[in-house]
Length: 110
Length: 332
Ligand SMILES: Cc1ncc(C[n+]2csc(CCOP(=O)(O)OP(=O)(O)O)c2C)c(N)n1
Ligand code: SF4
Ligand code: SF4
Image (cartoon, rainbow over all chains, first blue to last red; front, side):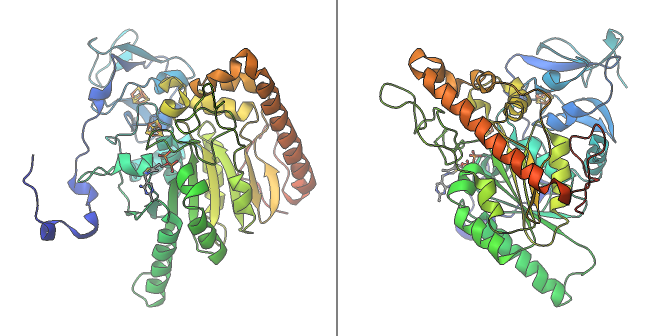
């Protein structure tokens, strides 16, 4: 815990400079499930990217990439809206590649 | 027609809204925010009314916003935006800011902050004619303080201040038609959209920011906590609100009305109500009459809107084949 600031040390109007702050990781909110993607089924429609409430579906430029688990709250909305069922929810403790990217049943690292 | 790739390209250039906020898992609000902000090509300044969006995205000293963002109070987001926009115009006039680099001013307010407590400041700002876009994310109750009824809460919904039980049946009153109230200010753009129809919303935003003067868009968002649905069903529940005609998608451009989406198959309202715990009591035997009333009201309202659409359709360029929503639409 930071030391409490005196009243005259608090920035006026509570200004926060975005680039200076790292957002707290909210991946710990997950309740036992996380998403994983089978890239062989993904049609790159990006609907999961837009609908993810936590911007945890990553895009690389304008292409689907994978999941940022540090921020994924496990709501399963991405799996629900995926038109090809490429996204599946798996137990949180299941080992998956770094961004949850699978190809033809095996991990896809890049 | 906007494509999701364009939205992604805009976000790749500048991620205006970041994760790490404390909105609930499966909350619909970020879909509103990202669709709106990624549809605007100019730099934006955001003003936010108090509510879940504001509280959960700005836990000091953190912020989810990567754009200039201002919060003053619950009831005055539109007034605060009026001030910011007026200051901007004054600075441009004095040559302190460039005149050829337009900025878009966007307000986000919940239904409590817009239909109820912020209504007079919104009305004032619409009447004065400030150049801004007001987006109400309507999740149909005061969610941040624990699901109190608002004037956007639909008839019959159980909330903590209109609870379902022996004495009360849920909310006894009709919801207010805020979009119609905004329209009554004779502004050049008013629209109604939903998180399930991102094309429709993106399209409306693009048109709304082009018009002269203020624009208002009322977007149906969702709240898994208050509506009591599965978090994963956030988009589906909004989709059904549209497909049951509970939430018609339309716009009013310079006073002319147009439905922007007509569901292919109209779903009985019961399907939407059944998905949500807040309406569970409506399915008790003794409340059967209420369901009929709700369904009839929806059909009556739809007929009224269809009639407006028919009357005004000649003022819009015809839709292309297969087009349910469009940007290529122009006033003729
Ligand atoms: C003047 C004032 N009254 C009450 C509050 C307490 N309050 C904070 S958030 C909130 C509810 C906001 O509801 P809504 O605008 O519907 O947004 P939502 O929380 O649903 O996103 C209330 C009542 C306040 N902050 N200021
Ligand atoms: S489970 Fe929810 S939070 Fe996680 S990536 Fe999917 S939509 Fe985003
Ligand atoms: S209470 Fe509802 S509106 Fe608020 S963050 Fe949670 S889901 Fe979203």
